[in-house]
Amino acid sequence: MRRAPTILHLDMDAFYASVEQASKPSLRGKAVVVGGLGPRGVVATASYEARVFGVHSAMPMGQARRLAPNAAYLVPRFGLYRAISEQVMALLRELSPLVEPLSLDEAFVDLEAGGRAWDAESARLTGIKLRADIRAVTGLTGSVGLAASKMLAKIASEQAKPDGLMLIEPGTERALLGPMPVRTLPGVGPATGDHLRRVGITTVDELAEAGEDELVRLLGKAHGHALYAMALAHDERPVVAEREAKSVSVEDTYDVDIHDRLRIGLEVQRLADRCVGRLRGAGLSGRTIVLKVRRYDFSTLTRSETLRGPTDDPAVVREAAARLLDSVDTTGGVRLLGVGVSGLADYTQEDLFAQALPVPAPSAEEPEGGVGEVAPERPVAVERQWRAGQDVRHAEYGPGWVQGSGLGRVTVRFETPQSAPGRVRTFFVGDPALESAEPLPLVADAAHPPARLGQSDSDRHGAPPRTPDGGAGADGWGGNREQASDATRVPDGA
Ligand code: DCP
Ligand code: MG
Image (spheres, rainbow, N blue to C red):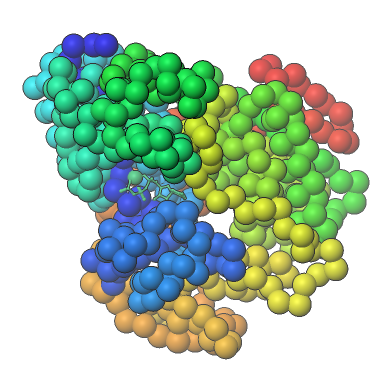
């Protein structure tokens, strides 16, 4: 392990919720919950004000609403989150060539490799400056951990939350870790935690005392061994810049344009299944789900959504692809559809023992014959659906966001990131003066404007975006192509 605390871990604070609060002045200081608002939706994240009520990520939305009935419940705006993530990752890449993103809002940086820091002092100054830069560029706060290993850096940023910085001096790791709960260690989720608690192990010290043989007996060879090393604060894992970009994708071109929204949905599900088949065949999982649509007029757009961690679960990929399709206008018909997964990994980041996220089971009520009531999240054939949190513009009143809708009305709050909290007005859902709009920048004339603010990567040909680093273009869609009609097949990695 290195001698200086020059591994930096950054994690943005309540990321999606903070973006929403920065966008919507009336929500600052208030309980905000972002997630799926449909019947099976779960919480993506909650603002710190909402966490006070016990609301947290991955909780079913219904439960969150019971705990915090007065919170604002908003749909995620992934395009904006991704654009902001790119701004943050760009700041990290100024510090070092070795930046390892873990999700949209989280990454490791090897400061030593970037020549930015060599001891505790220089590391701390770099961390302080980074936090200030993030604030200036994005208007948001992120917490920084600094330590001599990845594990400790991540633990430090967690301890520093929210809006803080913590540096762990080399040599003090074991004393610091010892009394902490086992759940502090990476890979110890609820399942592993319970398992250990049943045999009387609740702290890191108790893990270390149990000894390697006992842990291997309890958890199996790989996990037992890994956990024992972590309990001793041994972690030699290097920061690795994101692997060569690759993706697995499948697409079909149709002889006759498809118009029927239901049929398009079914095709997307079928492509998602086929894509997962190939993904699994290669022993991989991936974090970014990409949908590609070529319309009747040959305009091609890709939309993508980056998940919390890599997945190879067909239900998860299907759901993400369906969500992405929701945001695409297919009036006029489509001639090509594709589903891809990028951000590939051969590991999963979550609990080693069990995925902590409740993954919705593949639903039995698949859309065979059409459904009477359309779930709010899935506007299948509904022409216009106003979703809470969505950006809109009114011909007379200007930019705002949907606060709620129902009974043929939609309520809009007219405010912008730079305005004072705005007023609410109600319209008929079909009001022609009201249209959906692009998100507004959080920081006026920032030095680093977001690459593609808001638009979730539409209208870019071919390549799906990659969350954290550039390099999108070349790899994106092409890695592993399968086409029905023109039978071009490029082998993986070509
Ligand atoms: N996220 C999600 N589903 C989860 C967990 C997280 O969609 N189960 C999304 C929403 C979060 C973002 O990823 O805003 C980052 O996840 P974090 O775990 O870093 O959580 P936050 O940034 O929201 O809060 P914290 O301040 O605890 O980091
Ligand atoms: Mg975070």
